[in-house]
Structures are given as structure tokens and as C-alpha cells.
Image (cartoon, rainbow, N blue to C red):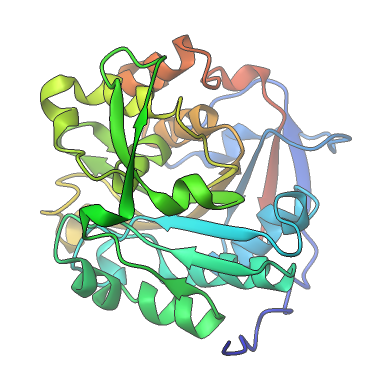
Length: 311
């Protein structure tokens, strides 16, 4: 296993933590998420701004007491970024490779047995892995990229609680791994409105085309009954404002240097929707998942921490 030089390099600057009792997150106004009191319990959601992807993750995971809160020595971990598009990191179409690299490093530092990374890409899978920069990042950190382009890697599961999605074929690592970390990138999507944490899970199924004729938003919500991620990390370093996911040009992508982290897949999607200036209820799969009790979109009920790396 190739040693990752920065694996034990953690954030050295001090950070300010604060918590929100009730507030709103809007695009371009992330400061409105936070109040002033230091938290005394683990947060429901951590929001970080004004840093590079690796340091922002360092700070966010510290808010939860470190990656050891989620992984244990000997565990097998699967990380699911968005690697769906044969585009470079600057396009904002895929998860930032620097973020994926740092998550792999934290897990290996904690003594896990293996860290696997994959996505069932929309474009040519191997090319997406390579040109996104994620394959190099994962390998340099000591993780393992695995294929997802053949049906043999998927197992059929029934979804008894699903309203539209009653069964699907899921990548075997999602079912077999001890810990599942979901790492989407925040972007506009022509079909679902936004592509967030729940939408990112379409990359772990084989026959996801069926979502579109069965009911896209309900199927996205239904899938969460199978296995919710143990941790969700929302990459908001670059945000695609429009024409996502495949047709966005450089004028459609802005640098916002933000990151969200939560165990609640509905809450993190609700917060990300607010960053876009949308009410979470406007994104149907968020509303459906909230109604089904998968998580909460009511941010006013959450303990939300702020970490600012500015200065």
C-alpha cells in the first residue's frame, strides 16, 4: 500500500465552532446558518467554508470527534463519490479529487482494512475515473478503485417500503462493506432539479434507467430504505448553477469553497438546497424522504455547527 504523505497532517489553525437553533441556509449567504453558542453534543450537521477540500474535511470530521466515530480498525469502507462524467475536476461535474483523497487517508489512518471507491458512471467508466483525477487521488492515498461497469458486480435486493422502487440491483460493496461514505458534489441537474446526496446513490445501482419511467423522485427516496450511508460529505467547493450535469460550461460553475457533513442524508440535502436558494420542499425527493421518515428536512430542529477557515 502506497503511503500517503499527508495522512497524518491535520488542520493546525484554530477554528470557530458555533451552533444553530433555528436558521436558513441560502446560496451566497451561508453565514445565516449559524448562531453563536458552542455545542455541547455531537452535531447533526457540520458546515465548513473558506478552505481547500482536504482541510475543510479535516475540520468537519473533527466536529464529530474524528473519523473514528464512524470507522474502526479492521473495517472495510466503501466511498461513493460522483465520478459519473468524463470531465476534469475544474468542470464541477464530479466530486473534487482532493476531498476524496483526504477521506481515504483519514480512514486508513484509523486502521481500516480496506478502502474501496467506485461509481457507476454515466460516461465511459474508466475514462471518468482517470480524467476526473479521482483514480490518481485514491491510489496515491492508498485506496482501491473498483469497477462498476458490469452487471456481475450487482446483487438484487427487494425494497418492501418502496412506493415505486420495489427492487433493484445494488453494487455488492454497498451491501458487504462495514462503512458506507457518500460523497456527492452539489450541482444543478436537469431531471431532478439538484444532484445531491440522495441522487448520488443512483451511482450504486445497475438498472437506474428504470427510475426515470417509474418516477425519478420517488425512486430516489425509495432507495434510501435499502441502506442509508453512515456518513454523507457534500462537496460544495465548486457548484454548478445551471446546465448540469453534462452541459455546464465554465460560466455555469462558481467556486464557493464550502463543505457539509452529516449522518442524515435528508438533512444534508435540505441544507444544500438552501444553498441554492431553494426550499427543500421544492425538490420532491427531499420531501418524499422526509415524509417517509428517512431523515429530516427541518433544519430548525438540528444542531448545526459552523467551522470557518478564513484568516
